[in-house]
Length: 437
Image 1 (tube, helix red, strand yellow):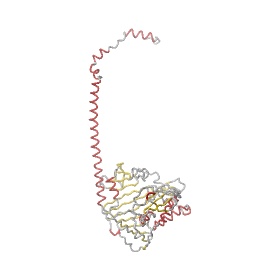
Image 2 (tube, one colour):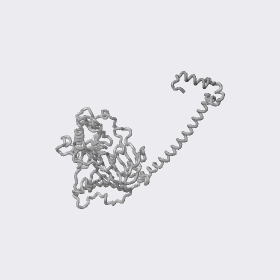
Image 3 (cartoon, helix red, strand yellow):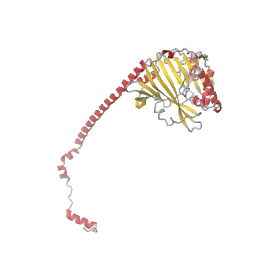
Image 4 (tube, helix red, strand yellow):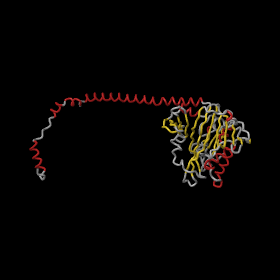
């Protein structure tokens, strides 16, 4: 064939060889494929679609049933585990455990960070007896506190100076557990909270299940996660982390191995409890409130906290927080209204006047056994449940803004502290929130 032949001449030659193109005969095609044509009929198509929908529903129902069976199979054992863990907590007459607190510290120039830890060993003996052992940086026992939760009596032992202190302190430092055990909140969470299974982790060479719950899920500001660790074999609670690992996990923090430095400021990160032993063998003498031989007995009177002292404390907190009253009066993860950890690590000459004032007040109340004067003032002067703090973001000096109020035990009237630190009797109707009259 001549490759140079024009396209038109080539097409003519091709038509001559193949003949004329046959016209399409649709009538004949329909006759040969009657079944296919019938299927295209709307009535038949709708019938087939109904059959298909019925089939898909049956398949979906079967999958859903299988899923439900799996979910029931998966979650019922966990509910059983929770019930067993709760029973173990409720029935334990003695316990021991370790509590480790973590802080993130930052160098003075703000360029380096590291983690610092403090460890305490705790023991519990029913009903309501506690013993807390603290350690110094070298791991030596530095102090021991024994508490009777029922009476509020307390014995503190300075193991280095061989002194006793705060023998009859009313406040219980590890919580008032006179009628329940120390892990009662864990048992309640396992019974009542919506816990989410978030995975597993290694705890003392064993793999445990981690369940998480939010303490206040509706409040984005105050909501805080808690991880509870359940051993899948023993069904016991073997520890917890507060906050949970979604917010705080020292094992994965990038600065966990950084060297510590002197000075700088620190903020609280969280706490981990582990090493729990149920029904531990404990000598009852470990919970004695009698000072051991050879210890100097130091009895210090516990003065009442006045309204003026409460106001002075509020002023000090506002001054160290750039002239505004803090978001809360108590510590929580990553927040210290007194900025104590930061201030305490500074040398005296490096503190501002406001920081030194806060430092002095903090030491004063720590020496008398209180973490600030607010709790004691409320206990001594305020009607039950009447104290309310609303000072978040209020500027020091704001005469028209209430910082806090309470109902006086002695007079029955409401007293309010304003942003300019004046204190006045107020009518319940003039308070920013409703109160029980």
